[in-house]
Amino acid sequence: MEINTEVGPIGAEIRGIDLSQPLAASAYSEIHEAWLRHGVLFFRDQTLSPSAQAAFAEHFGELDVYPFMQAVTEHENVIPIVKEADATLNFGGDWHTDTSYKAVPPKATLLYAVEVPPTGGDTLFADATAAFSALSPAFQETLSGLSGIYTPKMVHGKGGGYRNVSAKDQLGGAYGGNDEFAESEVEHPLIRTHAETGRKSIYCSRPHTHRVKGWTREESKSIIAYLTSHLTQDPFVSRLEWTQGTLAMWDNRCLFHNALNDYHGHRRHMHRVIIRGEPPE
Image (cartoon, rainbow, N blue to C red; front, side, top):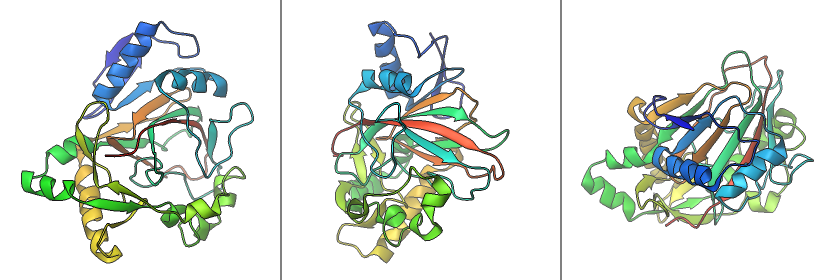
């Protein structure tokens, strides 16, 4: 197994490994260590059924369930993410960390490319730990004392972006349901401490953080926008150009990502698995 770190400011490509086959315990440990060190890992040229993808993910924790998408028939923890050639809306098309509106958000996401467009459809990853470290000590201290109200309602709720564009048609018949949860709110810190590394990262996002606790929505939008702009500067961002058979595994506790929607007229089909994390602190 080889680890190539020449992929940008964040991330690493793992070479010389077949994830469809059982690995030695030492290999899983090495992958886990690389994941904690680099934030996101890329595995090229894999051939993974939904069951094989889920089996690999289970070596890193308990598999979680995504609340707004039906799983594929083969495995209850693998959801299809499909943008058809005639659709205009894509899934995950803004800077965010996955499902941060849950009381216990997933620590990891594993996304596998089943079918990719000839060009476009890349995913950007941003290092929220390095971005936090680049802030002034005084601003770090101020942010570390703030909590946010996180909710799916801005995306999945009655007035959310997906509901306003008939997302069930745009994202496929697997999308929908869970209306009560779509309006729910939870409280998390704006800056979270990684449960395994102890490092601090920016955690609030435009799609999922409705407001800073004790602040109005309008007051909150400006600081969330500033932090998003700050953490998505080029020195913190790597770009993954997908190819069929690529698996990406990223750490939602310290990375943001953004799926680019620049391949209209072409189909993109991915399979996603999430791994249960811990309550943000």
